[in-house]
Image (cartoon, rainbow, N blue to C red; front, side):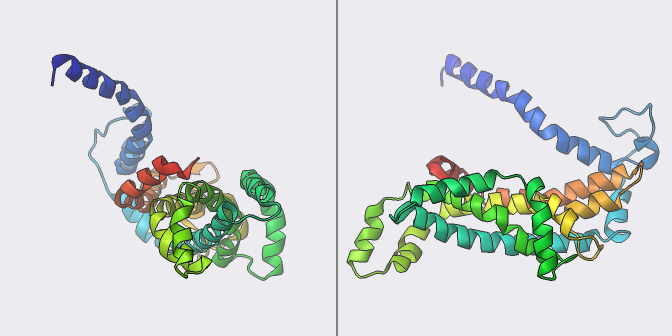
Length: 279
């Protein structure tokens, strides 16, 4: 490798350093805050970006054993897994139909799904609250399982429509010539090819569900039913008192499932993005 090429690569990587610092600084500050002792955390003259008086796990201990954080996390996992699974199944079938089948109004349906996804949840939670009360799921995590697909299905459908269009039609046409039905061609031919796109849709849907706040705050209230995003903020902020150590500990622990998913499925995620899943 020549010196000029080496300098170019070093310069290109050096230009990424500010963006890397910008992206990682919130996590660094959260981790630092969660490990500080209270006397240093609330000391106005302490240096905010370093730990001088030694780290402590006291905030994590209080969060795990003096609050219902484990219950909130269990509720979040249950709601997120069920809502994501149902939404990806429905979105896959809808995306395949809209990208492969020819019928009157197919383009309008695709546009309608995209517009539905753009409607903010802050406009929908009031009518959905009436629906939740009508079906008897008020103050229940099952209300979230029912309502989350209202924004996840349009999202996954729109995402997968672009990916299915990159899969050649000839492969499934050959399967149907050999006697396969449309459903068999989808299950045995298209879905194995579309695994990167499906993983990409699952990751995005899981992230949206895990981080959702408005519906969880509106449809659940008791400590046994709320999710982690609501529990951490509602139980650890009391009036003008902020339990910053426990809040940051909850933020760190709450990001662990998302980090694990993206670490294990990073290759599929990148493949799904570069192959047209967001076109």
